[in-house]
Image 1 (cartoon, helix red, strand yellow):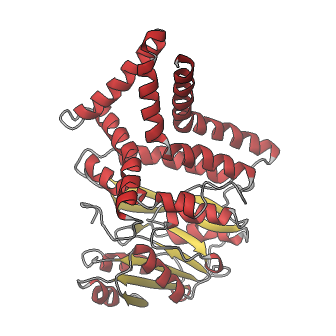
Image 2 (cartoon, rainbow, N blue to C red; image 1 turned 90 degrees about the vertical axis):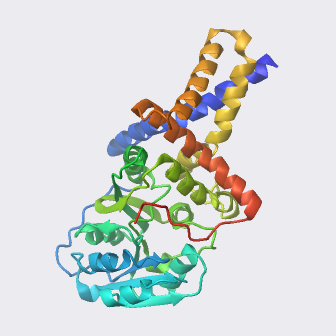
Image 3 (cartoon, rainbow, N blue to C red; image 1 turned 120 degrees about the horizontal axis):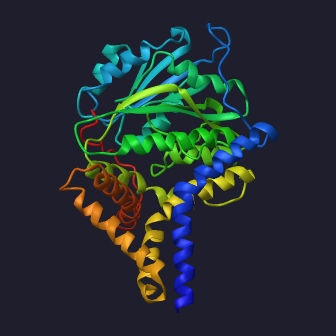
Length: 385
């Protein structure tokens, strides 16, 4: 029994340390090696196109549900981008909005406003893509503001016909609250940049991304462009890249509890994506991309289970040596710090609370999926508009 518990402890603890710390180090080493041995399939490129010549036609699609407060500003931001107006189509896909979203989008100058029956965000994205006429389909949240040159930077990698998906960099505007998402996101962007240089990113973001028009995949309502497109394109021989110079800004959820609720909603469709759509199936992946999927996706999504196994195993091993006592105490200290983080807004406690709740959001989302079925409903995060 002791030997089995030790195996479980070292496997779970090692997997947690690897996915959070070891994987970024491994990426750094592999990307440095790739500079000398051409190990990675692609290096990020800067566009040489300064004028309209050679720029693809783009349809910028904004899904919206009751976004009358921000949709006018979003359309104005899109029309003000440094991109030839005759090569840009702005589409607002209003998914059963009950307010003035459609009217305000038209008044702001959107080229096409779709007034759709309620179907969820992915259904709105599918409808927008079907109606689009651009060679490249760009997507953005209604509350995201793009830098003037963001679209040029976003479409530049599509000059390579092997590129199917590109996501940009989203910067979160600090809100009055205790959310630590901004700090985590800087870590995530560093990892994403190294993934892009090695074999391609394993996930995107909803604020700023684009796909090759003829490669677009219509997903089920429980799907997610952020999670589904990179691995689906990899299996089709297309690369998914990160373009950090394509910048967008978005309001951050003010509280850690709000961030937990947001991530919990995002994780509802995880089972359908990871198993139903085949994210965790190795078939069709290039070896380096498979390495990224296991390291960055599979182990991250197993984090709640790995933490539970490590805690129980270390408890069973308390009489087997001082190290297991220390491991058990440290895990209890993390839980205690997370609990204290709500009452004591000190940075270490806030970090512990953020980590605990965002890890728990994976398990909570899967629990919601088991109880209520796949997601797809619109639920905007409070405080982000």
